[in-house]
Amino acid sequence: MKWYDNAIIYQIYPKSFQDSNNDGIGDLPGIIQRLDYIKQLGVNTIWLNPIFVSPQVDNGYDVSNYFAIDPSLGTIDDFENLLNEAHKRNLHIILDLPINHTSDQHPWFRDAITNKNSIFKDYYIWGKQVDGHEPNNWGSFFGGSVWSKVHPESEYYYFHLFDKKMPDLNWKNVEVQNSMADIAKFWIQKGVDGFRLDAFIHMAKADLRQMALDNTEKFPVDDTFFANLPEVKKYLGGFVSQIKKENPDIFLLGEAASADAYQAAEYTQPDEDVCDMIVSSDNFGEVYDNKNYGDIPKFFRPRQLSLDRFKKTFIKWESVLANTSFPALTWGNHDISRFVDRLKLPTDDIKLKKSLAMMMFLQRGIPIVYYGEELGQHGLRYSKLADFDDQRAMDLIQNLRSKNIADDQILQLLNDQDEMTARGPFQWDNSEYVGFSSVRPWNWAEHSHENAYQELTDEDSILNFYQRLLRLKSDDCFTLGSYRLLRTDADLFAFERNTSDKSGLVIVNFSDKEVDYQLPTETDYHTALANQQIQIVNGRVHLEPWGCCALMNNNGGLD
Image (cartoon, rainbow, N blue to C red; front, side, top):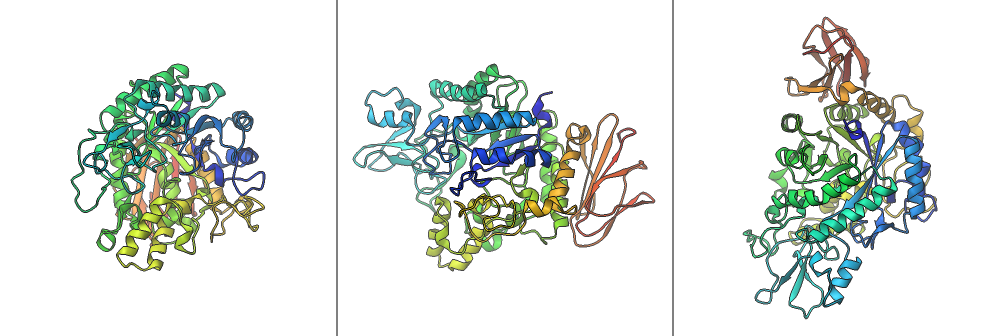
């Protein structure tokens, strides 16, 4: 076993967690101030979104210096202090490492475009214009073409899947693999416990002469050409093998937004130099309103949680990964809106939020809690379209206005789905700036009023439920035990967890009606955790609307 087999991860967006110097931007010293809160929550691992030097075109994912901390967040001394203080509390630290691309201000790229004989030219991907146009018609995730010119008069373009100020690295070049491994080893030597490998599934590209066949757009986004290609594992292996030699216990969490369960299994084979776990967008149990919003890009399309889809998704992921790796158990992250807004839940009742947390995190897998989720925190609500300054949102506004869709409808879509709404300040208290800062935060708008100060003293709060839930998750029954999803009525979700000497049964009522659940065996259960009073009468459990319970028996498994 590795330490991360028992990981319970807390994701922090550093700019939005705690401002220690009152400049409106969260920072590393602010995180240090809150380590006791994090420890008390019941997690044992912290994942930090990017903290490296960056022009902040994409909130830190455009790195210009991988060997230093962005001045807005602190110093290298602050980071070393954070590591030491976290490790004193038995908390591990994972850094977010963008490996698909750099900033256009990175020394490698600057040298490549200014030095005719630069050795870094081959660190990036270049293409020559064809008939006065881009080398192909592939579309960027951030809108427009994946190709941009350094100089308007040049006949050569560089490749960027994301913003034009974020050129993609050429992972065919072994020196890129070595250079990125050197970066990781630098931080491992500092004491870092792991990395989230951002956008690694895009490291390989298809033949650049191929053209996307979609004629409805000038530059269609078709990840056929740049996602999950076979060469990804080859490039990843050259990188990972060097990291694991430096520290065999380093944890590699791969971000593979479009990967399915089978691809996740390929990326986590235990006998290969690949990732240890995959985070995908495939496991939220979402269904989209394609009937009314089919012409809107999928990212912004209204959706809701389908329990049927959730069941089918997790039985598939569990079946595929059972003997390979752990699924990631998460309701969201910094790249999407908060799940309490995104999934159009049937009620804002805290009982449902507690049930969803239990339903997700007690399954087989490694939980990832997005900061503020443990409060039931909602996303920010912007008052006007001009408040959205991320490229994806601006492209949507332009697109929908051209279709004569009213601004208030566009604003509703963005407030429900845009990622920036999920990056608001952590709500520590009910003061003017929610205890985050004494000045206006960098990302600020209308917000909900959940806060840690009030919830810590409320035994019935979501925060207190999360603390008890994560303590229960650390029991080996719910960490390493076998998993079996049970057949139930449509509005129920139930599963068993078993070790050689313990058994657990989790039951969730995803409806506004009372239900009775017949226990599958005559086992002497006790209630380990519930969001209501639980009584077992004649082998039946009565659940209130949105009720949930985790039952345990310590006298042997159910198998």
